[in-house]
Image 1 (cartoon, one colour):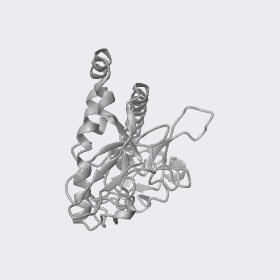
Image 2 (cartoon, helix red, strand yellow):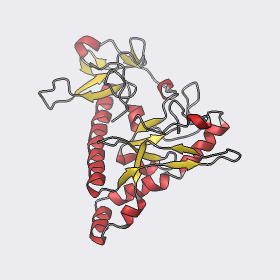
Image 3 (tube, helix red, strand yellow):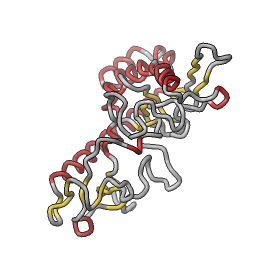
Image 4 (cartoon, helix red, strand yellow):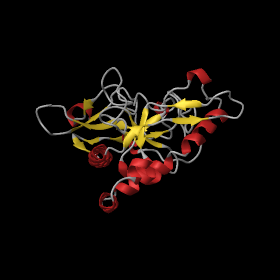
Length: 261
């Protein structure tokens, strides 16, 4: 559900190693009050369970490509995050997406011939070390900390699957279109254009027949669509924050808000 670095691992992850008490019984999880890996990240994968709260803070868009991913925009340009300071701490109270809170752990299919998922971690994250705060194992058995980590990752996996089903429904309805937002700052000779993402077409939504709209309302999809559409107005607020923080791009260098996500 994320931007794919050259290693083909999801956003943030540099390595993935299965957790095992026999190998990692000495490791501990660090208590965190910051997220340095978020500083230069402008788009975070989002699950549909998070739409209601996330739309208060971030524009919710969909990535380009055959399998769009819902994304919370924390900045309009690559490498710009207007909510996180250089120290990795939030500049003011915000909602932190579950994708961020899951890191450095992840359920992954180690054996591609089986459906079984294994709890893994990014051994290069610096967040799981011998001198951490909370042991992951009690002997070779999972500690309470690791049990909670596993539960969170399982819940995230279920939410991710539901999110994929939601996106497929939007595609089946043919209401996703290539998005474009034009922002005209005062005194600028021409507007900044942001493309490279997808959004729900409001006109196509209005043209759906009454039976389809009723079905969407009954199965909870319509409220999710409306949360997405309402959130798009925050794009201009993000641009204003970039101006305030001196992070607005040069006019000729305006980039898509999530073209690579």
